[in-house]
Length: 279
Image (cartoon, rainbow, N blue to C red; front, top):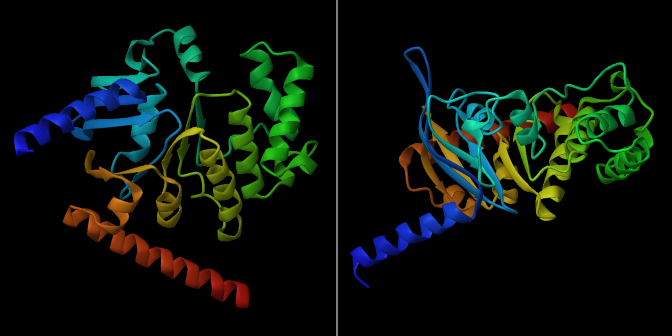
């Protein structure tokens, strides 16, 4: 097969992939004044995939997630979630309808401190989805068991560790039964001892086929969980591919340099945690 035929097949495969995507971004651009934040982002995620976005701080990773659920509006480009044009959802009712389908787990847990864990989980399903209290509570207890917090149903957020609060936040997101969940550096505010318990929950969701997009600095986790990985810098996607290809055989020198540094920091962090444990 000649090179032209190969290129044509690759182009057709890309088109088919976009058509089958649950999430698709095409040439998304965003600037604040003269500062460009996103410079033509192309990204697609098929239903059931776990996709990670990695890159240095300030590279536009979190902004991509905020564009997907309408928290930030780019100046140009296309964003579709299961065929819905995100940029066309301009009224409050339209945005609420969109966000019923897109879960977002932030760095900070954003739990209501005056409500116990179960009450934090049932408030949105009852008010937004119109579920009965009995149905919402039954679902909440099942989800707390799923994230291994069944015994914390009546606890208040202030009595929980950071890792426990983040798992409650994940359960709260699942209570809305979203098609897509966005995770924005959800372990960055946690102490090292509680990172693993949160990553384990996310890994189980991915194994069950929950469509996920993760912005993360946890390189080993991204490699283990991801069907595809996107490396961003300066508001552009420098490289993307399977986790195996990107982490073990990156094409771009910039990707290789970033991964070398990130893995060095990861080893340093693990060594520091071992010293703390020994002490």
